[in-house]
Image 1: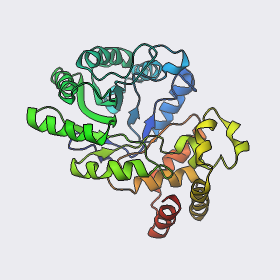
Image 2: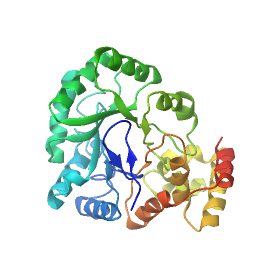
Image 3: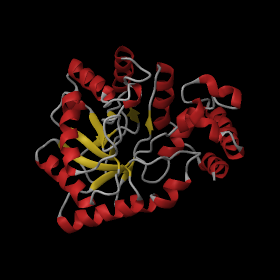
Image 4: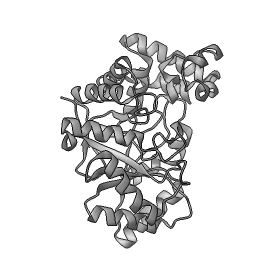
Length: 316
């Protein structure tokens, strides 16, 4: 039985891996997406992350491919009540810019619900912040949705520390819903942004943290060691920046720790994240059964002080 984690002060309890839905309808077709999703829940996991904008870059339009596939999958199994579904609003698509206005949120949520073939969203994120809509207005929209039963709880992703603080002040002052979770960019080769700007806020506001790009676009799997390796996948270009002294030192430490436990570098990378304060579940996507296996192993791997110190030193 996998130990579940409570999200913030909510009644939502999730297994410690959050399946990333950005690949559904992008690099995976519907049939393959269903296979990955089936295997994920068959192994006792229940937490899926998507967004209304996934994957608008396929055709440059509205997005919604991922939510549509997830809706069909839940409908086919009748398992909606067993899934904790997180989706997001506010991100740019081919049809609109970043938008966290009340008008946009109220329109977008109904489209998400229709695609997901459900009448409620467990965790609804501010995906990107337009930085011009008053935080009170965004929270008032969420208040309306929670009272209508369309959303259970809210969370924040790409929002500045200042606007996050302002949101909590507004929630307190006007008795509006509070963000319960944070989804930052955080992994072994991207520590500075989260640790300097957000870790203290997670502590202060009791936020459960679900890091995205947990494996640094695949760099932390160890499959990219030189420029020649960059053409191994569509994400090759985005890992080029990690092929520096620090990145290679992290890979060396991952090689040593993974060899010690006879496991993969990806599993160790995720286990490192799980061991950090306030981390609820790293977000990881998978396009094959093999990748899923590395994800499933992470919560079972408890790194000792020596392992954590080695990874800490290499990644600082």
